[in-house]
Length: 233
Image (cartoon, rainbow, N blue to C red; front, top):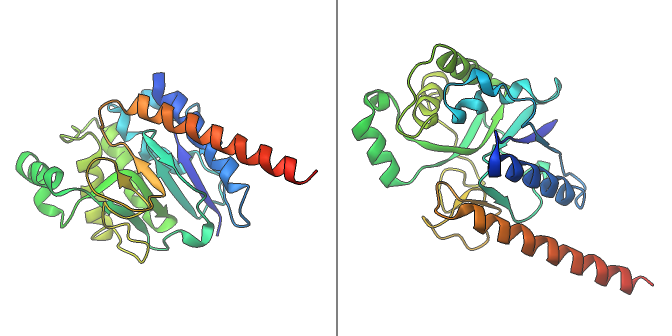
């Protein structure tokens, strides 16, 4: 199985955050036997084609190598706390975490097509295999036809298309169906004892928080490498 992680930012801090996320991911992946790469696709994404920046994830399959079997998408307001092994990747066609009850209630109240959706996932972190590719083709058509986004940008159309094509998003042993799970801990909403992905979904001051996290992580890694180097002499 050939897995690839993808992150992309259009400009400003988003572009810088995408670069940092990919650089940290690839560094951590090099420390484990079954690590896999992350692509910063900021330069490859067709930003001019989308009528809402969040719809850019519709083109994720266009920027990965042709032999990719599964893609992992991460919004730029995410931070990785440790390496993720290929053996940990969910095998379902599409996996994501369930969004919080407040967001779901708001979607059902404000967005009429929500009645077609059984449950709502958060689209900021997801895993998709090739079996889910029709969803992304539908999402491309949605933005090409300039159909209106939902109250949360791509979130509502994305959920609707997954529901139509796949019936529902996947739940699996790694717990992608709960916000408190370690894969996609949405900061400030649910507790998580040992999160793998910190997701600052719309959090106030997330740029500053991310800066501090990257600075702390880099200083910690430098200290570990320096200690190991001294010990080996």
